[in-house]
Image (cartoon, one colour):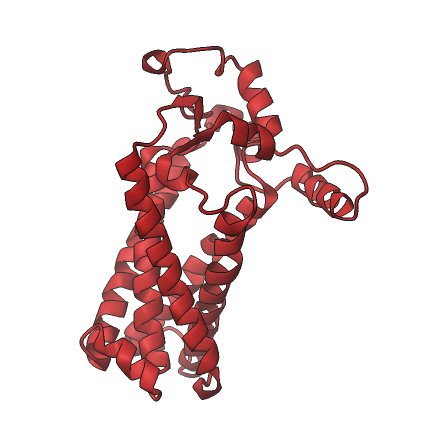
Length: 287
């Protein structure tokens, strides 16, 4: 039995973010490391230094537009009649006291004291992943726009702030690339319970056995809400404002092959940039 966790919109948004992030990372690093042989090779993939800058700016605009669409989508998902539950309930990505308790339980369990936390729909590390991207996007967008339009920006802010914007843009970009290609990839795909890949963001659902192991509180809540009561797939309807349909079809073999190739292709390219970035890091200056 498969439980549906992500809608088509969620999955398409994730793929959109992967593609735009990889493009931004590659074109940004090609310019950041342009004084090195690797930076020149990377820039050649996109047609040279100036072409990388053009692609970087346009892809950045597209990424910002996608972020604004995401904000609008979030606003449509809020239950304004029950705002507190909508913002801080178990289906919300906003951290709450349960996450603090789960972190403490995980620490105790790591040292052999107590049992692991019974996670609900969102684990504390998933919320951290989400907000790490969320707060980084406005910072990169604002500083990026200041650097794209320096003359216009100088009409409203002091000229020295452009130097600060350049510093923040580079530092946040390096932080984002490092975090995504180390922490996010490991936690998302290389944990024992997920290896060789956490398929749920591509397939949309996960086996009941896996959900019981990782998120027992979520499964128990679905049962209490009658969403795992043996409903046929064709009768599983969306519960507006809560979860997507509780049951889902397992992914077809061809689809699994496609997203495994895509996922590990993205991982390989990300590690390629991360390793070379570390090798040539001595040539980077943030001022």
